[in-house]
Length: 243
Image (cartoon, rainbow, N blue to C red; front, side, top):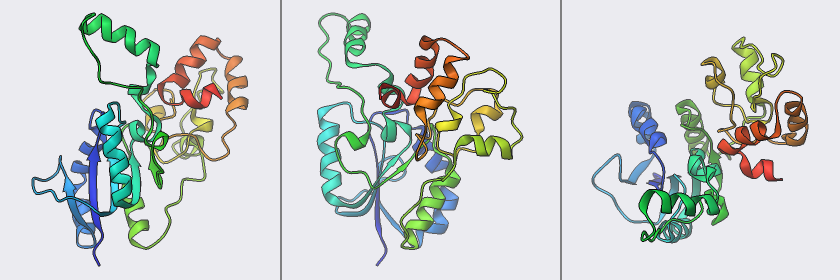
């Protein structure tokens, strides 16, 4: 039987779904083995569940989105979080509840009644079977996960950090050169694209397994002040820093 696949999105920039559209030709190779029955951004004819596999981009920040997420979990055999907003809370999670309320008033005025709640990863509400990290995702990583699922395998996370990919690419080590970077605790799979472009790693691929967060923070304290370290973690890994 051909697996029925659904692709949904909550609050996000839709960058990860644009990545999906950009690899449509590669997906067509897999399409003979899967049936995408519901995808708002990619097709007009959409069908309701149940689904064998549901992929969700974005973070739910309204009660309607939270309710829909729970319904999709009930209707799906496998549920996958796609991209940093779904896996970590992403950019929307940078603001905490107190700050969010302040900016609602500043931007929309005192009379505005917001519907938004705190931006949290999908796993804060339901069981998630696998996390495909990235901001945006890496298309090759997505294809790999699809292939492993279709082969009847349980997808595996990368067993190395971004530092391994930096060494493969001959990137100068930012930390050795006195510059903050979250590469040592971040799961590989991105190809160290940010470091290649001259930027630090902010951890959009999530924590690697057995990440030594405390050890990295101690190293970073020798490079910069606490406020700057918090800024690095706040981008994607604020929940890890709070621990």
